[in-house]
Amino acid sequence: MAVLPRSGASVRHSAHVAVAVVAAAALCVVAEGSAEAAPPATARVGVVAVPGRDDSYGRSALDTLAEVVRGDFDAVSARFDTALRQQASPEVLRKSWEAYQAGFGRYLSHGEPRQAVTAAGTVVSVPLRMAKQPGEFRVTFNADGRLTGLWFLRPGVPVS
Image (tube, rainbow, N blue to C red):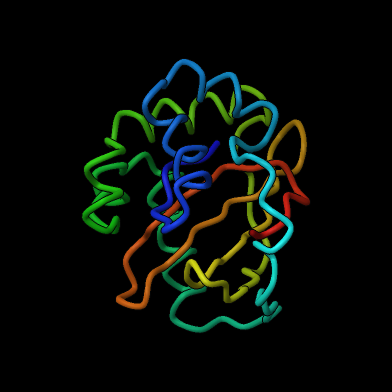
């Protein structure tokens, strides 16, 4: 499930916004693992993977995941940048997390965060151990450390 990253590319932005605008559609997409449209071939240029680093972005991603797991969606929303906060409510987050758990099972634990730097910001992916099948939690941070995107995914969705 995607919850609205901010992007300069209107095509990518529209693909992300569609999920929050139509919450019912987002709930259906969650089981598939991603609401992102396939990125253009050039979108992955400049992605630099930095596995195993637990820097401030990794810590912030894990703190955000902890807020999601305990149901504190107001706290998660407070981490959003202005554009994302205007597009996604705590209620949309709650419904998305509930739908994700309906498909993947309840949250059990998580692995080490993995970081990648892209043109859109710093992306942190956290593998999830869910009751029915593995999943992935992913967030994107801007240079100010605010969230510009948040996703509940199936494992293996490429960073774009």
